[in-house]
Image (cartoon, rainbow, N blue to C red; front, side, top):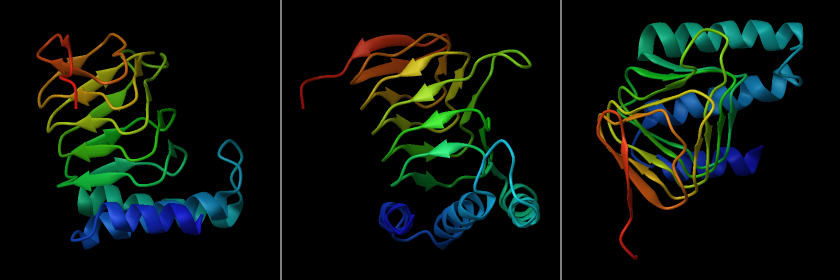
Length: 164
C-alpha cells in the first residue's frame, strides 16, 4: 500500500487536494480489508472519507472502487466513478468525468493502465478502455476502446493514435 501512496503522490505533485483524497482512499481500503464485507472501523472511516470527498471536494471515488497506483486527479470537482469499476494504474482523471453503468445495476467499465480522460468525458456500460487510450474532453464512450486509441465525440468515434 505504501507503494500505491507513493505513486499517487508522485502523480499529483502540486495538488494537495488530490493527494489528500488518494491517501484517505488508500487508508480506507486498508482498514476495510474486504470490499464486500468491510470491518466496522472501515465503515466509519469510509463514511468520514465520503463526507469529505463528496460534500466538500465534489469527488465521488468510493473506497470500494479498485484503483491502481499512480492515478492523477486534475481539478477533480464533479468526478464520479461507480464503485464497481476497475481502474488501472497511471490513469488521468479530470473534472466532470463520469465512469459507471448505463442503467441501474448494469455492468460498468474496466479502465486499462495509462488511460487519460479529458474534462467531461463519460464512459458507460460493460466496456473496456484499453491500455494507453485517450478519451477526449466531452466524449461519450459506450463501446470498448482498443489499446492506444483515441475516442472523440458523442457518441465517441475511435481514432487510432499516431505513432509515438
